[in-house]
Length: 256
Image 1 (cartoon, rainbow, N blue to C red):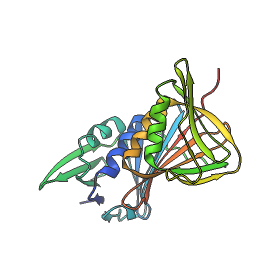
Image 2: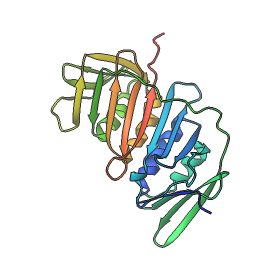
Image 3: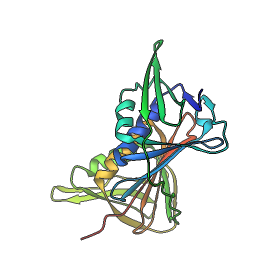
């Protein structure tokens, strides 16, 4: 008996999203809803970062929802999940399903053959609520800009400042080897939308951002929200039409 089944003909949306989330959090719940699709929310062990994955049923080519009104909740060891999704080709067909409440099944299919992986559900002690924050800046950029900006910043520092100033959105890193400041101005092709109530600049730990941007490879766009001394929010839109989203919240770096 199948409790739920979600099928998508392109594994790339899940390969990069699960890989990025698995680099940030060690354990995560998989919440299967009768009407909302598949959700997950988890904090990292140090409570510096949170990962929120939303995969509505519209994101899948085929979706068999749980027949019960209550949600199904599975606990995932994200290290095991990342090992599996790394084996996926971007052109593989991807299926996520369950036959019991004790394990989740991942299937990868290509060229007429199928690989099946069974993940034993683990106990997840706490499912955090997603924060409700009043941001003063929201910009949407192409994924390539975020990837390049973080990698450029990594050349000189382990901290990066993210900010806006007079119509420009930028990353800035300073270190003994110099200064790096990738930026994009309002109206540029790489800046898809720009909404800023004020100029802000806040510093964040770069090691977390390097893990988070792994999701950019499977994203259609990246929405970035920030405010002065507030957590950074990165939202990667995933799926054939950007129906799904992987969001990360990252606490500001505390200056010593």
